[in-house]
Length: 239
Image 1 (cartoon, rainbow, N blue to C red):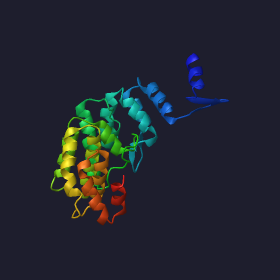
Image 2: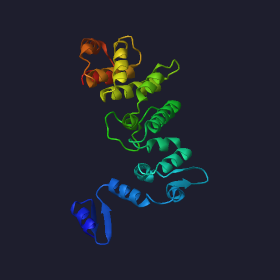
Image 3: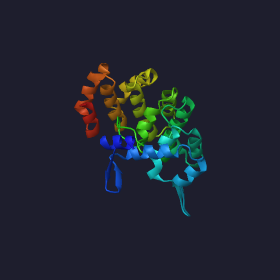
Image 4: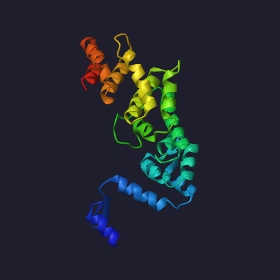
């Protein structure tokens, strides 16, 4: 009773008559995960996995609960992977062992590479279950930068792979990864060239100069601005 009064006082949840609501859905999801923590694995899967005649899958309304649960139940994480690899990757705890985090990163990245749709999510946005770009950054496995460099450097790499790979490497470099920084820095002169046909790469390169404080490229950046016609690249140069 004392605990309930305390969270009401802090407005974590609000009661009105017989109705109770949470100020933020994350509290409800976290407390649900706490309740389910000791439940049998099969019971949890029955609750969260929907089976229909034409399609089956994890109910999106349970995604955040699953993420909280997987921080306590690695057996659940493994079971999710067996049914839906992408959901398992999204639910991988950020403090999981390096092998699990590497598996999650490669699963997410390769999924979008196959679909050729590009990673959803904004640069620097907070992590949520649908921001796969930020999840790839936050997972930060020790071999993450090397994996992304290999994907970018592959002769068969598509536009989507190069764009996503370079963007993630810029984020890794901004977070202090020396290998990612060295690779990004080596690419920038060519990407800021007037002969670079891929405006998306030029935009990311311009963004990287600012994000990583690469002042040695400022003169080249300003020279590019004088002739650049793409509005997205011009905006990135001015950042």
